[in-house]
Length: 444
Image 1 (tube, helix red, strand yellow):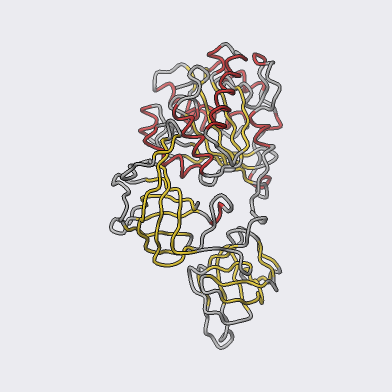
Image 2 (image 1 turned 180 degrees about the horizontal axis):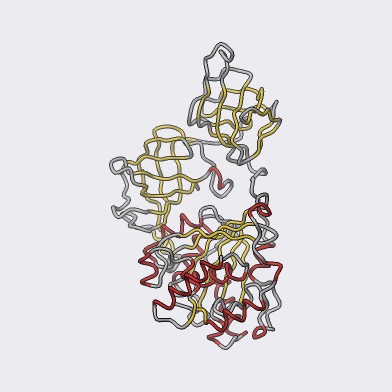
């Protein structure tokens, strides 16, 4: 696994730029949050890249730095291994690989960051999916020596499936190919050809030559790659637009709880509590209660003891309607007539269980706060994530398989197409007997 030489560490302490110094918690409390998912094959240098980002943005405390230096010495190394900052499990540190999703936090003057460091092994595909499910950016690493490999195809497909808005392909270890511009451009062309051939859409893609070991094109430009005229990694991340509230999406308000105090003071009070999943709600808006179809108007919006005129996505509020519509937990308020729904849904599913997914099986489907019993009507196809070819003659999904299924629900599933609304288009499948989460689905 890539390491970090002590002499380079000492050099970077002296030359790292002040604009990226770590901010205090008071300074960053109101900043936007950018969610990043890392991906790459084993030993492509994900953990070292994250360690480098933490180090160069001064997000490592002195005691933590001393601890990883001591840990590196105990391993018999004569350098500081920054990958130890993210490989938190004992098994990870011993094997030098990432086997679980780790979440890492740091900040610059402009914004806060949350990184989901996902495993590179094929057997942890489910971890990659969960780690990238809320990401604004996917950093996909490629070893410059190896070029495009099976995991690159898999990660690009997952970014496409999850509708991650921005993908940055980091061609790492450029120092091991003599900083060759020709090698970098060859990999870029290979990835672009794959994206076009497999029709991988839904994201904006860019490419960046880096050496995470020596910090080249991470925070500062690389003297060895003067031919590269684009942004450094941190500049690319700083420029990504964050749509934190998703107010431009259709309005979705899943009801989590019906508030009925039944006191003398609030005898007729009926409030519908929940979090606005997407869109906005305003006092006076006409809304439809699904699945009943009852129509009413918003009388007031309350947030604890405060009256609001408007609630936006991400806010937890209580909605009072002018009419008694009899809504309950699991129902949903939408702007009048703006959601098509039914009992039969077609969706992409990533299978997460050792027992195969086969037609005829029943599961519990959880969509937001709503639960229903579903039966698998059929398996339409499975995607070979190595070749990205579609396989139609299949009898079941095995662990980590991804493909399209048809489900029949015991009650309407109030979901959007995941392509149109990530906030309301995903669900999980739960084994009725073990209560384990066995699959995650994305409505087609």
